[in-house]
Length: 502
Image (tube, rainbow, N blue to C red):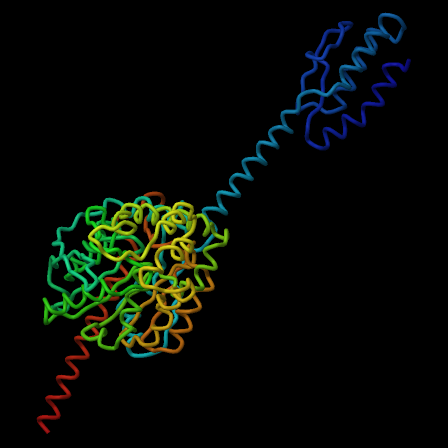
């Protein structure tokens, strides 16, 4: 049996190593001659191995190095020292690592390290573009979202989808009903301006909301109220079948690119207000519809002074490929939107799948069965939506309904807005507007770093402001275009007068 002194010398390197690692040291806190048990050894961080050695030497001098009882006591002491005690510093390190890991994921998910910057602009150097940069401060100013969560495109999108806007107003308007040639009843809401426009002109904004949206959505109400206060009349299309209080009168709903209802609303506005000029505004799916409408026929651009499209995808065929991917959770968003579309379609089940009013049905019971099992917009489009207009294949439907092939036909000033962190619009789709702006001098592309899909909330730290960056930008752009048109008209009048004088 080795002596206590030998055991002490053997454990000393361990004590020194533990102290060097900054973990702990042990001190036998007991009376001389008393057995050293486990719960009497306390970990401390102050005393080094030299202190431990000195205290143990003192005990050895008193208790002696004899055999029998004293030797047994010494052995118990050394055994207790060799037992593994609690290691609070180690556990504190584990907790610290866990906290650091959580903070890391929070920073990554909330994108807190992303900088704030002015939006990326793609345009050609023309007198109009220079005038716009000078007249629209938001084009060259930093967009600053709420600091805590505003740099996350997912949270911006979720807040838009769930809440719409903060403290949204309730503008007062008049609902109009239009009967279409196929028996469908289109509706739009008309809101008169609350003050005179900055140019004193009669200007009407014709607005097309996003997928399955209508004039009662919070983001539409917020924008309409702000536009009214800036002197604009607003006409907002209610997508066919989207309003829960309005029943379908024909076996057809809105689709991705059908411009019939929007065209009917614009024609009604032109007829009712013969002196008004139009500003065309589209959000998300509505952006595709308004661009396609303007490019379908040159006559559709008459009395239109500009067009604004926000957060559209430009090509349904290319977008549907990215919508099946889990990158940026697009597959999850796809499922949520498909579920919402299913609810809307099923709410009109009698007219769409039944024999109500004795009209010819485009859909069959087998289509209804496939609808129940659909988990993506692509499946719904293939089994339901394309059949409203008789397309044979999904590819044919997507190619015909996308504005991609009509953008080159638009000659009025066109502003295309997309956020770089939009989880619904893949980065590859943004090459479409960029390429267009490089070829056409009437196009300006605006790409802020943040904003999500139709979010664009602003705010200091946590709580967003009621009015968004998107609302302000559209009205700023509209004001600038109105001013540009007035100045151009005045210059034309002056030139005409000078010519007559000569």
